[in-house]
Structures are given as C-alpha cells and as structure tokens.
Image 1: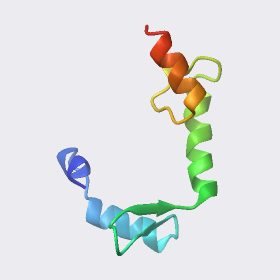
Image 2: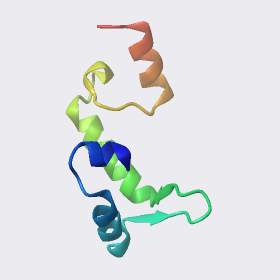
Image 3: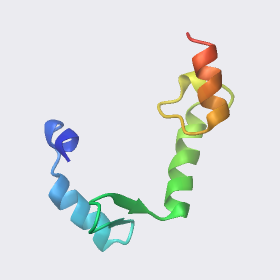
Length: 75
C-alpha cells in the first residue's frame, strides 16, 4: 500500500474497486492479496508479450528458467 501511496495513487479506494469487481480477494488473516489463477495468467501473458523471446527485456520474471537465463546473461 505504501508503494501505491508514494506514487500518489489511492490504494484503499483501488483495492475496494478490485474486490468489488471480484478481481482480487484480501486474505483477512494475512492481509495478502489473492488473485484468481486466470487473472494471474493473463497478467503474465501480457508481460511475456513485451518480449516473447528475450526475458532480459521483460519487466517481471517468474519462470525459473527465465530467471536463471537473466542471471547468467546480464546485459
């Protein structure tokens, strides 16, 4: 939340909207966000499209093979 606030976004309002639209759930025990697998996969596909063949150019990494490639092949 602090990261969003520092960007002058309104996280409390934004999170309520996302929850209302059933895009995320807030785990009441841990305070963590939970996202449906389909939403997660859609986001990953969007990031993968940034650079389909070169993980070095992507903004985020989650695949262990891509992470290893980036660590072994710095720019």
